[in-house]
Image (cartoon, rainbow, N blue to C red; front, side):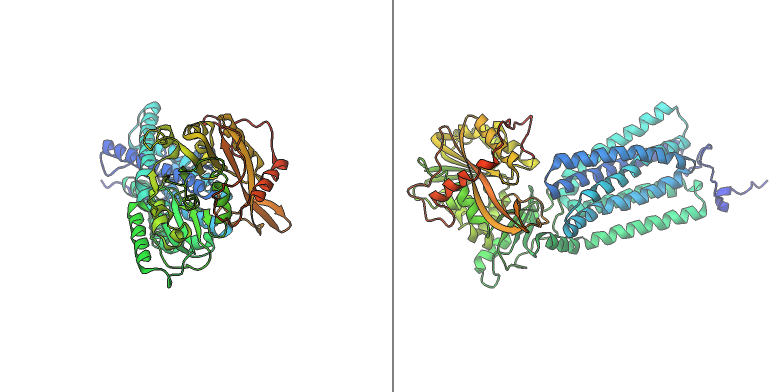
Length: 596
């Protein structure tokens, strides 16, 4: 007797998915293992998408706590909505899961590229971040009900046991994805290429499970539709991978406003240098040394931190114009703003006592060390920099080394690689380097960023005060007091809580257009300030601190300065009176308060 044809093979729109066991090409035990393996892979991909959004958003805006909170809360909320919506697809779980994974692979794979494009060309990314978090959260949340239906169709078991198996595979996959992102994908491929590869793996795992293991559940039309959808998704992801290098170059030029002469990803951050040298006039030997350093940076891990990683280091292109040094997308130093900032930070601290031994915390660009070395009485300068490749660029890049006067090559300068907090905590200032310092210069990231929490805490200033010799002075960059008074005066309260007396002052900078740069809130640049009409004045707020009340003046042996005089310093102190915010508590490691 000939059995009647299976309705699936006739292209019936109602394949037998809901109640009957699935007709598998393998034994049920192996089929169940394959479903759980797919759960594992999809969970790993989902967590990579999530971490990629958090990392890239933090890179673009600099506030990792806020970005992580937005992404995680929106995604978890959306996962609940996705789980509810997936109830309608349980009667067609196989085809629903296949379509779901194809869409998730496309959305997740291109999320980093879309987020960076919106930031580069439109100057904002928050709305796109929320939209992608919602979309991916709903798609990830819809996976669980469909996978639960599929695993029950492979082999019936009690609901509790099925849920335990499903979530065990899901959580282990999340662990692998969470570890693969920072230790494998990010250093090896970078944000954009890593997301595209993850999308490809996602599409292959989801499509392969449905099109092979559950092929008997698909009508002919559904099977070909899923094949076409997955082929299209993989083709788009492959095309995106090919276009990553030119896309990154174009986006980077849009962000920085000109072609990047040097763009490298160190193990700590992305370093971009624009302008600052004429390739036709550069010394060949210096240029050759700079190229060697960039090649080393590229091998050392050009994708090693959050943010879109350049495909290669470029030297010589777009070299005209003033030099700009960008760290993780934020202008850290520029030839237009360099002298007012570094003269205001360094020279008041060099007055009021000896300055033979100087400690620079941060300052891997060599610009603070350049100002310190202008004093003939300086015998030793220790620069503690977290990123050794930044210090290497400061020595070898023609534009940056010319700007810092080759300060890091001076025999009096010793560069130490390490976290400044941990270095101070381990007694590096006193135990291993000849005793305390006459002057400590804190040339660190902006106090308004989450990354600066530890470096603007009461604990940090307590460690810094221990590094000071008797009568020593500490100089701190404390943010822009005109536009962010609470941040500035919180730093002042924190320094005083560590047992030091302070003398606050503000150095004015250039007047700039009110439209902010697309590179986010600058750290040392004149990018934020008090609006005046269609333009705004900008400047930098500093604190001079000591165990006794410090006096704002210049040392008798101070060199000729471009932007600073004793009278200007006195005016700089008086200008802060209207901005003072009294009664602010100090910022600590356990209770950071420096964010506005």
